Length: 280
Figure (spheres, rainbow, N blue to C red):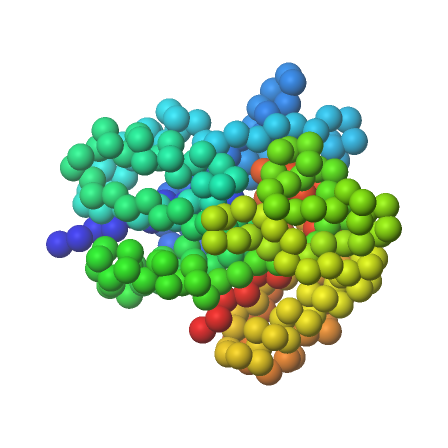
């Protein structure tokens, strides 16, 4: 009889209520200041992070190795036979690799580590489906077979007020825009198959960038029914306004606003607005 544990990290942006509902095991990334460091979402909130950015831009790091070890020990102690981890993109963090190495010390626990090659609610959306499959009685083998297919159906897009934070954090990937920023060109950023940021499209100014997000959503909805999450990082009013405009569009089976966590907020800076879309 299989007893399957589901592990994810704070890159997924699932809120505590959802994590608890499905009994997920949670690995927090770390927010590191000169004088202190915090566990992502557990010890620092998105609001606290944004308030601190003017004084100091912290660094981020993968979950603490001992925390991962303790989590795997806890999973084994609770009688789990299998564990599935859905991790933030390896192109942006070493979390998946660290977990893979530590899991080798737990041979009695059959572990599958899925590199989501994405982050935020696209990662969260994949994790949610896995949680629902576990709850409905799907086997370990059935779930790990579905995960790559889910990734193909799940996309994320966002625009930023400035690219400065991505540059400072070394997460700029294949996004280009230094000259464009001087011309007020705003890239719509997505994540490629390697799990790295790239410029999906461009718009002139914030208003047109938000309009481009609407066009992207319309394109997805013209193909199939979709679950939709509006992503926001210190841009709640814009997210609410966008929700009002699109919430009644046909083919949307779920829509809500999702706040990005502190670890992602460090690299995005204030003013992120985006979409996570999962085609059904």
